[in-house]
Length: 169
Image (cartoon, rainbow, N blue to C red; front, side):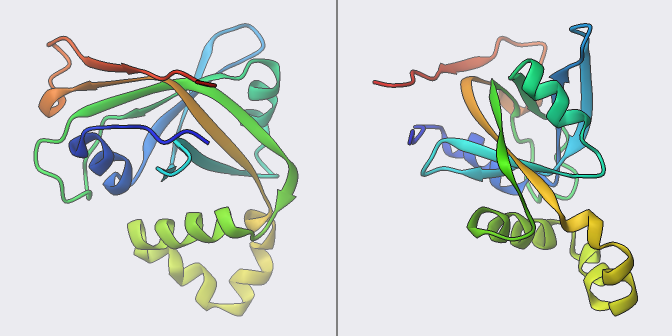
């Protein structure tokens, strides 16, 4: 896989932000954006987001056109002071397997519960777990960046710094 050489301030955004904006393209080629939690795998240079089988629109869009973006713009709750705003542009691939838990999902759930501690309460009630079991059956969506742009201290009025990611070298 690909390990990216990124400034620590950019990596801190990937590790600390509670959510980001994930954009795909619909049938008509129009952008569609959702708030998602993204988990960064630095050793692979990849991001993981997931979607429940009950909400397959992201999967349909990606299978038609894999070009996607992740936009890390809101530092609320991250603990970071004046972090950069970061745009990741790349290709997404949807796992063929629908999963509840695997090694990647273990990291996803662990980070999600750390970022959103109140979400643990859904797992603490047996009735809620039973009624919401569909929510935990998921597709894994892996995003491999082509380029990463960041704006110092979130100032998008200034030019971004950019890393173009070379694959297969």
